Length: 634
Image 1: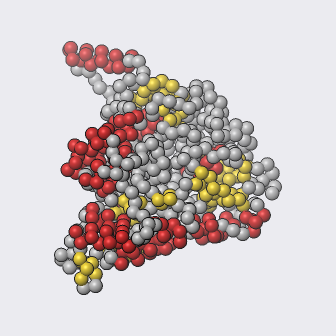
Image 2: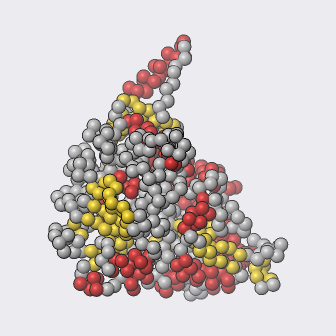
Image 3: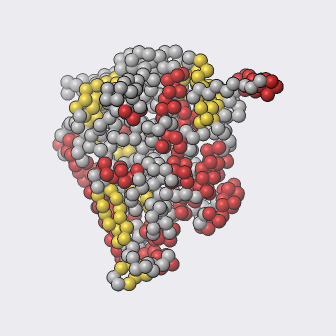
């Protein structure tokens, strides 16, 4: 089964000198500034929680899900699941090119770090404490004196400011600018104290800025020999990153593999948030041309762990001698992660996909129940909306709080929003797919499409032909049943595979009809949804708004979700947003796996007994597993 890889983006995670004027106004401004400086803090702690509750108290020893006595050493051999066949840069933040898998997570520490058994909370890593002002218009971080970059220099407030200014600059993804749009600036208070100022109260922003990967001002601070000028950030391509994370870049074989080497002097190795974590001396990521090559290499013992995205590979092809002997073990680990919203994305910038009736008709022709039984071995569940498996998921009809947010925008949203939450059409009833296709035909007729001269045509005689764009020819296996159903009602869906570089380019310029993407979910949706569904992002090339949705109601609901000061207000906004997006039919929901499917070498790797509920598959292994004693000899 073809399973789209998740889209990436910034983590979920300036000095501005205002000189007071002369006279009474100037004195008033100075007094106000002093009072703000001395004002009591709303939050000053070893961590920060979105709604005020932290699981781990001050002075905790370690996260519950790690083995604090795990031995250090050995090697973890992984396989890259990126859709690119190799990498051509070490800078994961610029637009062009591909960076190696896991580089950002292993090489860059953040101000705060979350726990994998808790949502909406994070604890100090580079920062020893975080202080949030009563008006929630700023968050102040005090850096640890022991924090060090890989070159031995201390991590200072100026490095934090430099990171922020670089990420919102002209040479990085527009997603950073969207996510950080409500950050007014960064003030260096002293050598190790930095304050982020916010344009409006926002509970999530301390977590957002706390999750920024911090890098040194010295990274790329060199002269370009071709121009004789100092490098711009997009020219920092193969310069070795100067981060403060647990690993550095080790041996590299371009086109084959990259090895990250654990820093034996890692500054944070004894912190509670790092105790029992990152136990392997080396993490090697191997690169293969395609999924078949990856699977055969696993069975040949060329690497130790692989996450399976294909149900067919997991059920039918993950077999062989090493599985029979118990060297390779298959494990399905249940999680409580958000389902995400892996979907077919319909580009509403183009006709006829700008017509909601056409979009709804396309969704009615997708027979998930048949596909799950025949193609996926019953391994998947249907995606319902944006926020499945979280408190933000909308159920039933909107309550009074949601209706209060939706009513002012009645003219801009489908009337169905005020009824039950949208449910993907099913085909396992007594009439199966037939009734869905009849409804689809009625919607298309209503939209002006009639069957004549052997095709479904509009008033101008143009046939209804759409193109599905993919970078993987294997995707045809999943798209074909959908295309076959669409053909029964006169719609032609053409499968167009292209190489990955062209695929990326066409996505950047929104040059497609339909694509398939796996959007990662979150328990704490925030400003990043403006990049996915906001009107400004819809007009911004290389943004994350692939659907082109531009609706003032959506903009307002995202803003309310971001600014919410109480959990009930937050939940009302995100549930109302989910209703509007679902009933707009810009996404055709696909499927998700309720477990992480991991095959791993049990002779070489040891792991904790339980996986924390909010861990990712490979991330759990990289962070908390360790090498079996004697694994190298074996």
